[in-house]
Picture 1 (tube, one colour):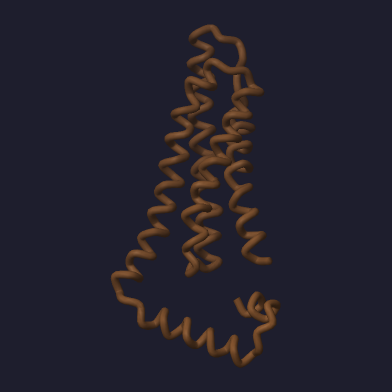
Picture 2 (picture 1 turned 135 degrees about the vertical axis):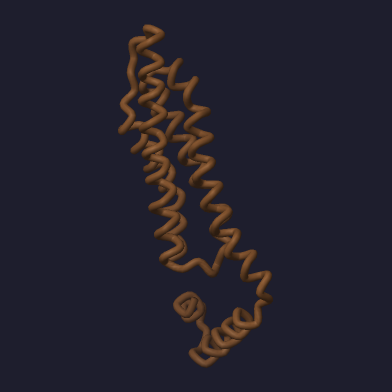
Length: 162
């Protein structure tokens, strides 16, 4: 915040005064507001994890019926959409610190990767039993989801740092 205000032409004394006001306001927050903010963070994590599970289950019929290319494209789109949804929620949580961002950036994608590997392996077994020839690569689909999920988040962090 200091850098942004300085770039806008604010004087050091003005910036110090604003920081004191913000710190005082944070200190005087009602305990319920603090709990609400904390619960929003955990709610976001739960949405990310459940959204990943939901998307992977939704992807099962698509993977059964599609070729590798369409499976990859749709997986990437779903990952990007969920990543964008998470950013819409997170961008308004101004109190998040680096360890909060690190936890979101690591936990959800790792769970997503493992989940997609399991689901795609099950889809491949089902396709084999049905006699459908094209098998999907579980690790590649998981990595595509992971990358597409992280793109909106990385853009958000880049723009936040600027």
